[in-house]
Image (tube, rainbow, N blue to C red; front, side, top):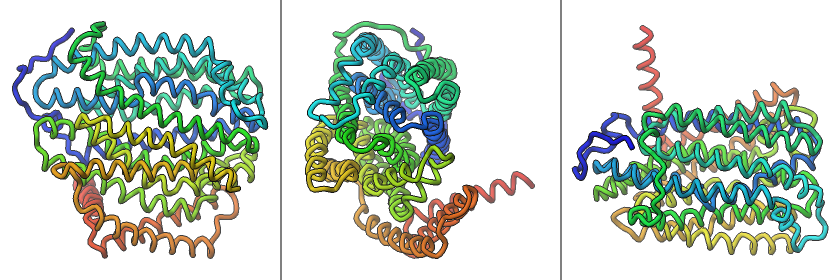
Length: 543
């Protein structure tokens, strides 16, 4: 194994300091990459709607990913960014790179063996696994389950390569190689889009061939990530030492995270289970709505916490608690400052947003758009609550306290099906699915916020005052957008629709930032100053 020349057991500056990359610049790089990845992901869903024009194949395609994704999360999913990256970051921050590389190598070796076994079993037993969806349900289309089981036979081995690529990303994140980790997934999405476009169609054969193409795409993606990060990745070798005490410590820290990540996927499976008796296209509409609400969440929140987590791990390891508290405060406020108005805009413009994103051909009907828009309304509050949940979860993981997010996940596992059943029994209909998800998020958010703030030296500050101001800004913005929507509805051809929605979006941003400046919110003035400084710098360079 290649070794680093730095001296062990001596405190050193963090990787961020060594490389001179600021938090804001890192977050910008991650955010830009995330925007591009999200955009290409939406194109992927649009191509799915075009190539699989019948609802039964759309539902089957969406359902086929559920159980493989669950197995991925059970074995390694959440642990990569929430355990491996913070652990390695902390070791780098205190000059113990060699020790970090050794332990992470053992972790990678063991999970690879476990994943190979699981992928093999999942491929063999896919039919009985998907038959579990039908338990307790009589009025469902069993053909959807049969098609999903067939398609998943290539998705189980696919998650092995996803795991390897994610491990590369987690390690490179610890080394602050954000450009590679942020833009690499774009290649994956492009390859998947090509697979769907070339191989997709309304038949079982086309569905299975499409998932086979996705398997090949994932393998290529992993090879590219490994190659681009070779200078860091070459240090890691196969080491099978399951009794190593440092590995066992890391594994004990990872187990609650793995269970927590699995609970999230279990909740998705539960919601799809409840969706099966509804009309064809409900599963696909639910997925479309999920993809849309996760755009602002992913772009603003995940980008910020991707940078926050390794930095917070280093600050906590160095016992710099004031800086750690400030980092969490800044991250939470920055994320909420953008997701709160996003939720308000989507709530007002739900049907127009769905049509703008997905209705690019006649195969995506008015009924498809109405179904997705209905789910989207129920998800709006989740944009905000999921922001808080993710920031606090990553903060807990960074400081090595992984059990509290696990307890929050278990709470969600109980609340989600109960809320769903109560709402459906009350006659709420398909909307019950997204409302139940939002209620679950609310309960988890409250628990996590209380638990983290009990650590006063690490607790974020000024949040209540910030939330009041941001909510007022969002209400004023939403009211203006509502009246503008009544005066100028998004009608006409596709270009005209997109132009009108874009104008409303620009108006919403201007109003929100203007009110925020009047309220003297630091988050608004910070980003405005950054914008003008960048613009001035560009002009100087040009001249």
